[in-house]
Amino acid sequence: MKKFLFGLILGLLVPAVVGYCYFRFGYAPVATASAPMPFEKTAARMALKARIEKEAPNKDAPIPANELNLVQGANIYVVNCAFCHGLPGQKATMAAKGMFPLPPQLFNKEEMVTDDPVGETYWKVANGIRMTGMPGFGEMLTKDQVWQVSVLLKNADKLPPALQSALAPPAASPTTAAPEPATKKK
Image 1 (cartoon, rainbow, N blue to C red):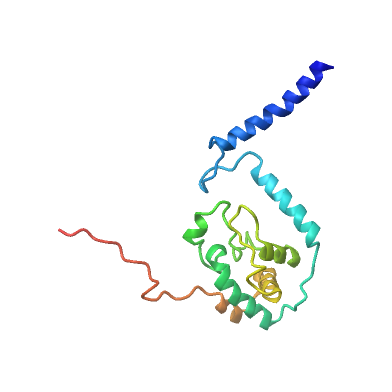
Image 2 (cartoon, rainbow, N blue to C red):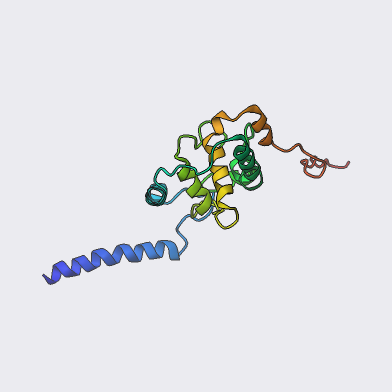
Protein backbone atom coordinates (compact mmCIF):
# COMPACT_ATOMS: atom_id res chain seq x y z
CA MET A 1 0.00 0.00 0.00
CA LYS A 2 2.90 2.34 0.79
CA LYS A 3 4.37 1.79 -2.68
CA PHE A 4 1.01 2.62 -4.25
CA LEU A 5 0.67 5.89 -2.29
CA PHE A 6 4.28 6.80 -3.06
CA GLY A 7 3.68 6.15 -6.76
CA LEU A 8 0.45 8.15 -6.71
CA ILE A 9 2.08 11.14 -5.01
CA LEU A 10 5.09 10.95 -7.30
CA GLY A 11 2.80 10.63 -10.33
CA LEU A 12 1.01 13.83 -9.34
CA LEU A 13 4.04 15.75 -8.11
CA VAL A 14 6.40 15.20 -11.07
CA PRO A 15 4.04 16.62 -13.74
CA ALA A 16 3.28 19.61 -11.50
CA VAL A 17 7.00 20.34 -10.99
CA VAL A 18 7.76 19.88 -14.70
CA GLY A 19 4.87 22.22 -15.61
CA TYR A 20 6.06 24.83 -13.12
CA CYS A 21 9.63 24.65 -14.44
CA TYR A 22 8.36 24.88 -18.06
CA PHE A 23 6.86 28.29 -17.28
CA ARG A 24 9.25 29.48 -14.56
CA PHE A 25 12.43 29.01 -16.59
CA GLY A 26 11.10 30.52 -19.81
CA TYR A 27 10.46 27.47 -21.96
CA ALA A 28 6.83 28.38 -22.65
CA PRO A 29 6.29 30.23 -25.95
CA VAL A 30 5.10 33.75 -25.13
CA ALA A 31 6.04 35.73 -28.24
CA THR A 32 3.29 36.20 -30.80
CA ALA A 33 5.51 34.65 -33.47
CA SER A 34 6.08 31.48 -31.41
CA ALA A 35 4.28 28.25 -32.14
CA PRO A 36 1.36 27.57 -29.79
CA MET A 37 1.85 25.38 -26.73
CA PRO A 38 0.63 21.80 -26.96
CA PHE A 39 -3.17 21.74 -26.77
CA GLU A 40 -3.31 25.56 -26.43
CA LYS A 41 -5.76 26.10 -29.30
CA THR A 42 -7.91 23.14 -28.30
CA ALA A 43 -8.09 24.15 -24.64
CA ALA A 44 -8.83 27.80 -25.47
CA ARG A 45 -11.57 26.95 -27.98
CA MET A 46 -13.14 24.40 -25.65
CA ALA A 47 -13.21 26.85 -22.72
CA LEU A 48 -14.55 29.70 -24.87
CA LYS A 49 -17.28 27.55 -26.42
CA ALA A 50 -18.40 26.22 -23.03
CA ARG A 51 -18.51 29.72 -21.50
CA ILE A 52 -20.48 31.20 -24.39
CA GLU A 53 -22.97 28.30 -24.38
CA LYS A 54 -23.42 28.83 -20.64
CA GLU A 55 -23.91 32.60 -20.83
CA ALA A 56 -25.35 33.32 -24.30
CA PRO A 57 -27.16 30.26 -25.63
CA ASN A 58 -28.73 31.22 -28.98
CA LYS A 59 -29.58 34.66 -27.68
CA ASP A 60 -31.41 36.79 -30.24
CA ALA A 61 -30.72 40.49 -30.73
CA PRO A 62 -33.21 42.78 -28.99
CA ILE A 63 -32.78 45.29 -31.84
CA PRO A 64 -33.82 44.85 -35.47
CA ALA A 65 -31.33 44.56 -38.33
CA ASN A 66 -32.66 47.75 -39.92
CA GLU A 67 -30.67 50.38 -41.79
CA LEU A 68 -30.28 52.67 -38.77
CA ASN A 69 -28.81 49.92 -36.55
CA LEU A 70 -26.59 48.61 -39.35
CA VAL A 71 -25.21 52.10 -40.09
CA GLN A 72 -24.59 52.73 -36.39
CA GLY A 73 -22.94 49.32 -36.11
CA ALA A 74 -20.74 50.13 -39.12
CA ASN A 75 -19.65 53.43 -37.58
CA ILE A 76 -18.78 51.73 -34.29
CA TYR A 77 -16.98 48.94 -36.12
CA VAL A 78 -14.83 51.34 -38.15
CA VAL A 79 -13.74 53.22 -35.02
CA ASN A 80 -13.24 50.27 -32.65
CA CYS A 81 -12.81 47.04 -34.61
CA ALA A 82 -11.42 47.62 -38.11
CA PHE A 83 -7.87 48.19 -36.85
CA CYS A 84 -7.62 44.48 -36.03
CA HIS A 85 -10.50 42.85 -37.91
CA GLY A 86 -10.25 44.77 -41.19
CA LEU A 87 -12.69 46.28 -43.64
CA PRO A 88 -14.32 44.86 -46.78
CA GLY A 89 -11.81 44.42 -49.58
CA GLN A 90 -8.87 45.33 -47.35
CA LYS A 91 -5.95 43.11 -46.39
CA ALA A 92 -5.12 42.54 -42.73
CA THR A 93 -3.41 45.50 -41.09
CA MET A 94 0.21 45.27 -39.98
CA ALA A 95 -0.97 45.32 -36.36
CA ALA A 96 -3.27 42.37 -36.98
CA LYS A 97 -0.47 40.42 -38.64
CA GLY A 98 1.62 40.85 -35.49
CA MET A 99 -0.98 39.35 -33.17
CA PHE A 100 -1.32 35.78 -31.93
CA PRO A 101 -3.66 34.31 -32.61
CA LEU A 102 -4.32 36.28 -35.79
CA PRO A 103 -7.61 38.16 -35.43
CA PRO A 104 -10.22 36.99 -37.93
CA GLN A 105 -10.79 39.38 -40.81
CA LEU A 106 -14.54 39.64 -40.31
CA PHE A 107 -15.37 40.80 -43.84
CA ASN A 108 -13.33 38.05 -45.47
CA LYS A 109 -15.78 35.37 -46.67
CA GLU A 110 -13.81 32.56 -45.00
CA GLU A 111 -13.73 34.28 -41.61
CA MET A 112 -17.15 35.93 -41.36
CA VAL A 113 -19.26 35.21 -38.30
CA THR A 114 -22.55 35.33 -40.20
CA ASP A 115 -23.29 31.70 -39.29
CA ASP A 116 -22.70 32.28 -35.57
CA PRO A 117 -25.66 33.09 -33.35
CA VAL A 118 -25.78 36.87 -32.88
CA GLY A 119 -25.74 36.32 -29.10
CA GLU A 120 -22.36 34.61 -29.39
CA THR A 121 -20.91 37.58 -31.28
CA TYR A 122 -22.45 39.92 -28.69
CA TRP A 123 -20.79 37.96 -25.89
CA LYS A 124 -17.37 38.14 -27.59
CA VAL A 125 -17.65 41.88 -28.26
CA ALA A 126 -18.92 42.66 -24.76
CA ASN A 127 -16.55 40.42 -22.81
CA GLY A 128 -13.47 40.07 -25.01
CA ILE A 129 -11.41 36.90 -25.26
CA ARG A 130 -8.52 36.34 -22.91
CA MET A 131 -5.01 35.90 -24.26
CA THR A 132 -6.01 36.89 -27.79
CA GLY A 133 -5.75 40.67 -27.76
CA MET A 134 -9.55 40.92 -28.14
CA PRO A 135 -10.66 43.51 -25.57
CA GLY A 136 -14.08 43.53 -23.98
CA PHE A 137 -16.14 46.53 -25.04
CA GLY A 138 -18.91 46.01 -22.47
CA GLU A 139 -17.60 48.84 -20.29
CA MET A 140 -16.83 51.20 -23.20
CA LEU A 141 -19.94 50.84 -25.36
CA THR A 142 -23.60 50.76 -24.45
CA LYS A 143 -25.47 47.47 -24.74
CA ASP A 144 -27.28 48.82 -27.81
CA GLN A 145 -23.96 49.72 -29.45
CA VAL A 146 -22.59 46.21 -28.79
CA TRP A 147 -25.79 44.78 -30.28
CA GLN A 148 -25.48 47.09 -33.32
CA VAL A 149 -21.96 45.82 -34.05
CA SER A 150 -23.09 42.24 -33.48
CA VAL A 151 -26.06 42.64 -35.84
CA LEU A 152 -23.78 44.23 -38.45
CA LEU A 153 -21.40 41.25 -38.30
CA LYS A 154 -24.29 38.77 -38.40
CA ASN A 155 -25.41 40.40 -41.66
CA ALA A 156 -21.95 41.16 -43.10
CA ASP A 157 -22.53 38.99 -46.17
CA LYS A 158 -25.69 40.78 -47.25
CA LEU A 159 -25.09 44.47 -46.60
CA PRO A 160 -26.58 46.93 -49.11
CA PRO A 161 -24.08 48.92 -51.23
CA ALA A 162 -24.95 52.17 -49.43
CA LEU A 163 -23.91 50.62 -46.13
CA GLN A 164 -20.73 49.16 -47.57
CA SER A 165 -19.55 52.72 -48.31
CA ALA A 166 -19.68 53.40 -44.56
CA LEU A 167 -17.21 50.52 -44.20
CA ALA A 168 -14.84 51.69 -46.95
CA PRO A 169 -11.26 52.32 -45.85
CA PRO A 170 -10.65 56.03 -45.30
CA ALA A 171 -8.88 57.78 -48.17
CA ALA A 172 -5.21 58.43 -47.47
CA SER A 173 -4.51 62.03 -46.57
CA PRO A 174 -1.10 63.69 -46.62
CA THR A 175 -0.78 63.05 -42.86
CA THR A 176 -1.75 59.38 -43.08
CA ALA A 177 -0.14 58.43 -46.37
CA ALA A 178 2.76 56.01 -46.21
CA PRO A 179 6.13 57.76 -46.29
CA GLU A 180 8.14 57.52 -49.46
CA PRO A 181 11.24 55.32 -49.23
CA ALA A 182 14.44 57.18 -48.55
CA THR A 183 16.97 57.36 -51.36
CA LYS A 184 20.73 57.36 -50.91
CA LYS A 185 22.53 60.61 -51.65
CA LYS A 186 25.50 60.43 -53.97
